[in-house]
Image (cartoon, rainbow, N blue to C red):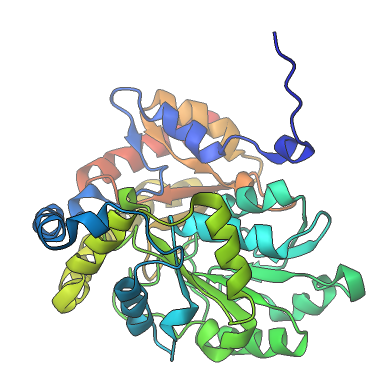
Length: 392
């Protein structure tokens, strides 16, 4: 057998806890409240079918050919037009999903041992994207309003050990569903500028608000001190693998070079397809339906939690949008230990400890309310309550 020698960085690459848990949901009869997948009910299949026919008829050769690494120019312009601050489309880089944007940021900004700041808890996919670069990931204290700004100075480091950036999800955060308040955003933007701390702002869920949109992005307050990432996965379809980043001009070329080395460019056909679908204000008509659906499902889950879990001493938040709820089990319980018992009751969730850079809280867990029906949500939460009673 040939002896293959792995790079040291390969040791930092580990299976996604969420992906492993999702395998459990393949068991017949399981109600999955685990995955972070958007509801397939929201996929605009007819609009895509019509757009695909037009793209192939009008520009088929170009759509099937190699293309510019920066992305399809009309799509870059469309992204710039969607954002709530003055964005030059030359600063927009189309990526193969926003997960690739995280990978590019890691490659360009992180050296071995570099300090990187994250929220408590944070997106597991970001920790995975950063890990191969072997950073020193430091968690900043966070509360229901977002990053605790007073903790930044203690965590940012100095000199060669100063943090390369703070990674933050201000809107309907994955995993907690929390949204950073306007006051906290302004405090964070100002303090980060004072500390000369770049921000990497990830906003895949920002359009999924229920009653009112979230405050303006952190990047809008300091564009030169921020990289902004977004995605079409939650408002159109994740199978397209289309995301984007907006970067300061002096950082953009290196991100582009990393993109070229990774995959040359994001698929041309998919870019042109989305550009065609988005014409004539399609998102303004389409996204409100997603919001209404997710709001109903969230309300169904909150009602079921009130009925079944509140008497058991479980606590949770009430998100104003997005896809997730964050629960905390009673003292002495472990979500990881609860999961097998929950699966026996035909319901699955994601234990929360994996979302922490340090000192994971074993009592926390994430529930998704967007892929299960309201009836399945009620059944699933009742089953989760039964599992908790058996485990407690």
